[in-house]
Image (cartoon, rainbow, N blue to C red; front, side):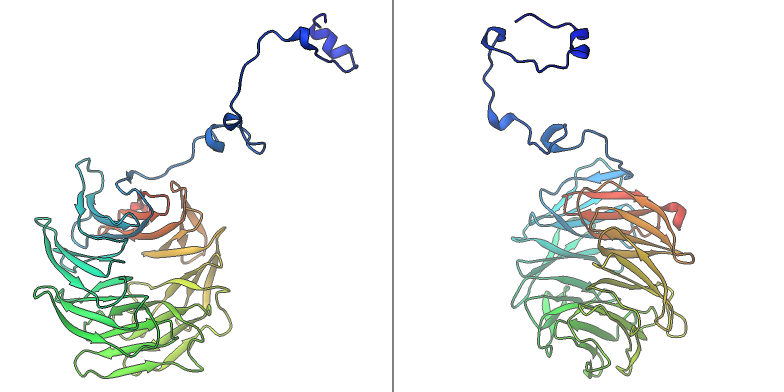
Length: 396
């Protein structure tokens, strides 16, 4: 068969066929090396174009999903992270030195919490232990054994003398004295797993939320317990809670999508989001840091792709829509930062409800975001196995 010139291709409308005499060389090709039909190019089906990365520091010490992060309350550069690789690390922002590894856990590190003075770090694991670490020398101070189930969350008492922890496999909450490495008290009474809890800022009470749809308020001085439940409260399990700075109010979110505000002293439900709610589970809740009983504002995020900013009567000031679910949030003075399933961090103006900045870098869902104590950086952890640091000084 004679060859065709370029002009022949343009002017000849007839079909062109090849026969065996036109074959010059044959090559064997492995079928596994061929691209899939739906791939448009690039390696492993990924787009060759460079992804935007707004982070100023990336920590890649973990070999699996990263679940939790904590920022030191006294050292703005010090960060702790834990993940599904059964490891925890302490490291510093913009510091090339090797991180310190928290050795000894035998399952995922699910929760981390610095003591209020920044001298100690508590690491909770699904192996059922809480380990307390001395930050100054990096040594393990003590290991606290939980009676049944993996640790889901860990909290420090405001004076730093006690550690509180709970499990989603157990209806009890334990409090230890880490200096003595001993139990102080076991709080029992919930009919199902305790999903969220915290000390009040004044240190006098503990609020625990459960999958049994109740909030229990434990008075540490009198041992009295207030149980918040019933028709005017949640119909399904609690997922999150936040406590006002003056220890007077608890705001809770639930699988039922509703948000409730409770008077901690009396146990009375003060406000309910009866006319406005999330259309799915409320994943995170936070009072504005300056909130008090006489003047407060709060924010909640959910898998319904919404951030809702609430005014004091629990009416929504703004509903901020996202492309994917909201998993976590943190207040930044007059802004709120949200972490999302799409791997983005969005910063919203609470006065206008406008998204003023989107921070990119993660390629998987964000599990947690924290702000450094100087307010200059956000630290985010993701299922993509990385921890990223973003500069946010302009939003202080």
